[in-house]
Each structure stands twice: as C-alpha cells, then as structure tokens.
Image (tube, rainbow, N blue to C red; front, side, top):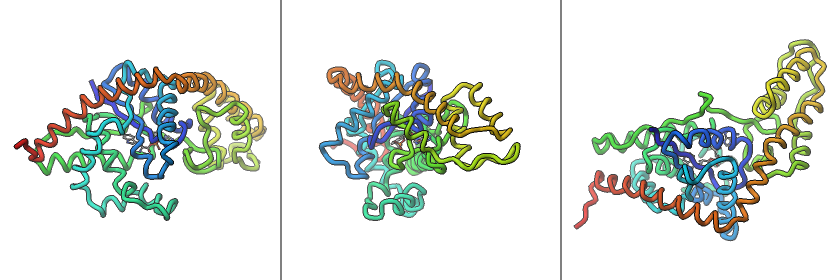
Length: 329
Ligand code: TYM
C-alpha cells in the first residue's frame, strides 16, 4: 500500500485548477492508500496574512476539501501547524539545503519578480518546508499540478541527500502523481498562463452562479477562425481545455466541429461552459457552506487529523534525530 500525501496553501479558496490538478486525484486515491492531506498554513505566512484572517482561511480550505469528497474518517486530514514535528524536520533539513540551489528555484525567482518588497527567507526555503511535509510521512506519491513539479524534484534531492549523508536508506523518493498519467496545468480565463489564486483569472468552487457566468463571458478569445481547420490561438485552446474538463464529450465534439468549419460563436461556447461549470460547482458550493458553519464537526475533524498525523510524524522524527546523532543524556 502506497503512502499518498498532498497539501494546499491556505491563502484563498480552492479554484478549478486546485480541484482538477490535485484534489480530484486525492479523492480517488483515498480508499486504496494510506493518505495524508493537509492545509499548509505555515506556507501561507510567506504572504503575511492578518492574524484575524489566518484561522478563517484554514477553515475554508478544510471545508472545501471535505465538500470535494475527501473523507476525514478514511484519510488523515490535518492542519500543518498542528504538527510541530514538521517545523523541526524543516529545521534539520535546512542545514543540508544550499542557498545557491534554493535561489535557482523557478518559483523563488518568480516571487522575486512578483513581490520584490517581500522576498523573505521563508520564500527561499519554501521547498525545504515542502520536503519536510512530504517526507515526515515518508510519502510515495504526491498528487499535485504541473506547477509543483520542481518543488517535488527538490524534495527528492533533499531526501536523497539525507540518506547519502548519513549512509542510510531511510527516506523513500516521493513522486508527483496524477491519475491521468501526466501532471496537468489548468489554464485561467485570461488567455495565457495557469489558473491561480491571485491572478484574478480563476473560477472558485464557492463562486455564485452569477459570478461564474460573468467571469466566463468575459474570458479572452480571438476574432474567430477565418478558414477551415485554422490553428487555434492560446486563449481559445484554453477554453476548449476547460470545456474538456467540465462538459460532456458530445458538447466538446460539437464545438470542435463548429470551430473547424468556422461557424463557431464563442458566446455560445462560453454560455455552455458557464452552465457546465455551475452544474459542477453548485452541489460542492452548498456542501462547503454547510461544513464551514458546522463548528463541532470541524473541531472533531481537526482533532482526529492532528492525532493521527502526529503519531506518524513523531515516529519519523524520532528516527531522524537518532540517525543524525541526537541521543538522550
Ligand atoms: P497551492 O495551494 O498553490 O495549490 C494546491 C494544489 O493545486 C495545484 N494547482 C493546479 N493544478 C493544475 N492547474 C492549476 N492551474 C493549478 N493551480 C494549483 C497545485 O499544483 C497544488 O497541487 N506548495 C503547495 C502546497 C504544499 C504542498 C506540500 C503540496 C505545501 N506542502 C507538500 C504537496 C506536498 C502550494 O502552494 O499549492
């Protein structure tokens, strides 16, 4: 039985990229594997959330995980900051992570560009904390989207380095995972790039139908195909990508034919896409709201998750301390 683990930063609500890139995969895997899913609230500190918002974001992500089909009785669902073994392992791993390699990480370089006023050390060592998250349970598979591929590569590098340094075969090499075999990148509605939390180009699971309609109708397209079988522009390709995720194969086929013979009206495609998104998100949205307001239930879930996660994490940390050479006097 494989150990499967993944996490989501608590910096906003889940969007369709998070769902199709990661959450859908966990949900499918939870019954056949030893599964750990967590809310990465330490990671969210890199963007300096206000203390009064911190817990609320965690509550939202927990509710969204469960509403998406994650069963906390089956999988271990926990909050990262409830497991102090994670920051301890992070500290130990930091001693063997080199500034040069961390500075070369693509996500770090992107952050330098996007938030030049807040290039904190937490951003630099973000991949080390991610590695600690993963190897604290010695995970085999990590369901994530394409954007996390390099972080996973770093996690394997740090795990391998630990094994080599101490001459042990303790940590396994965690692999990024997607059911459909390759990691995916769900595009946003702004024509280029991935759907993201802060890019303003996403559809969130909690979006009201009217909001979804408005966002989709405003999605970027082009002037339309002018001759049969013309090459698709990136924004239109992206709309078809979303259609393939959310609509029936017949619908996709219908619009593809229309594109091919130049009769397509993007307005019709967008209307259909918006309705299919609403059909998908509406039941999830309702469940999110119910769970979000159920204090007793969430308290129970978090307590149970922390207990199970700590049982696994403390065993790893005990072993790691011993391997490093810490001994009781
Ligand atoms: P985060 O919160 O940015 O995203 C959560 C998950 O959603 C995936 N994802 C996408 N997949 C496809 N298309 C998209 N447009 C898209 N946008 C987001 C991400 O790949 C991710 O799987 N650092 C992580 C959280 C984390 C973590 C971990 C994940 C912390 N520790 C350990 C795995 C293992 C993050 O910020 O994800």
